[in-house]
Image (tube, rainbow, N blue to C red; front, top):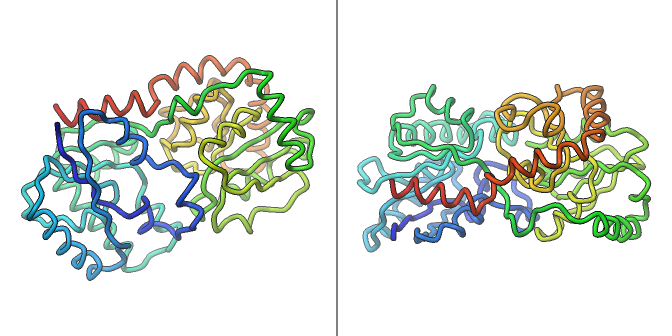
Length: 351
């Protein structure tokens, strides 16, 4: 059995984003789901403090060196360039880089240009040279890494996924029961109205939610399921309901009652939420761009430019796809479950 030491923040992205306590529960983590389904790999976790400076990295590097002196592993795995700074250049344990984000874009959106931003870029360049194996969330992301100078050719695409035991289409009768219950909970009519749903974090990286909230037609209901710093900036309209963070097992309750599902980050190319949306079989509206490798305009839903009119038109058109895209989306989702992706990951590690 292969032994992997996963080096990272206590919760992914703590060093990259302005963190909300609500992120500690209810939000899926790639690490949590992908790794738990890898049956032939033993994972150990080295959790480091938030890295904001080289002094932080050096302090944690010394702690890691001491830990490695009494433990042996087949791979060191990181999914954050700032975590990569803990690995010394002369370390002879193979490094596996799981490239799962557009790190510099996320950081710039959250904090702007500062000293840590340059440290982040340095960490990424270090991993591009040091990593023996690279997993990337999409062909778009991998292509960018290669243009930036990725040294290894031992790579694989493993997008973000969903748990097939939790995310699947509910029966029409179950959906009606849920609509009645949630109508009472939120004092609104979810039975006779079209419903738009977003599930995910409410951080600065997701600030297109403000535009989407203005674009949702007056006669629709927009349920925003999640929490974070952005929540107080969402426009207050009678048809917008802030549901807050919910337990992860309750997320498909909201996605299953939707007529349209939306995602606000046009620069992302493999959000976990998108895989969960596909598994439910509902039409998806998202900004066109990097995600076009996965989502297909007019098939999975609609890909739109980032304007109020485009979002509103896309939502209107997507409602008409509700039934026709169910088979298309759920068929696509068969290769996106964490269970399926974990097998790909395991095979890659052993190759």
